[in-house]
Amino acid sequence: MAKESIPRRDFLKGAGVAGAGVAAAASGVAALAPDARAAANVVTQAADETWLILTPQEVAFFTAAADTIIPKDALSPSGSECGVPVFIDRQLAGAWGGGDRMYRAGPYVKGTPEQGYQLPLTPHQFFVAGVRAADAWCEKTYGKTFDRLEQPKRDEALTAMQKGTAEFDGLDAKAFFAALLTINMEGFFADPIYGGNRNKASWRMLGFPGLPATYAEQVDEYRDKRYPMTEPQSIADFS
Image (tube, rainbow, N blue to C red):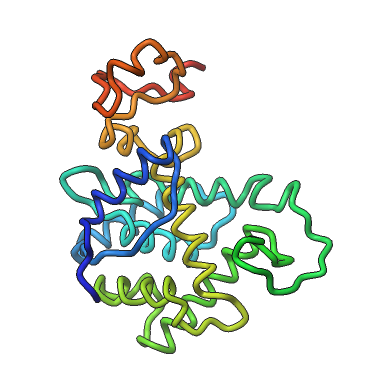
């Protein structure tokens, strides 16, 4: 796969700052590989979680995807270690995952990119269909489901989805990748009360102080500078 113009961690840090703690759009997937023993440990950790709606195969897929998009390094734990699959599970099991407040009466025709989501599926149904389509394509292309691929092949597979060259049955691979990337970024940067960003790892990486919106007096003093903080504050810290 092509060499990145910027390291993935620099991108993640920039996206976190631009999104004020939630995800922004992305420019690519890099190849930073966990070894086989680390992957086995992640599977064990996933088995210890209480899952609300994800099946074991979906957990395996989201765990592998999270650790490919957000690898463990000197700056933070991996995506799964930060609880990103748990965040995804809770989101898909909740009102948003069930399509609450979404207009779903149709007609369903292919829209322009500006028109956004144009499918009858709820977010949960969309991700279920996407995981199945991704695993089916990976089995056809590589002989294994996505979670069982070696890291370079996972990078290759996600890049094909991102470019839209992966041929999914009945689903737009590019749209699935965009949704997958967004929900991973949200899980990594959101308040820990939602299941991800465990131990406020991404906030510590960014130097983001967290919840309190009481920094007006420091805006000019710390403009374009890192704000000196001791401990980020989450919703749970004020409960």
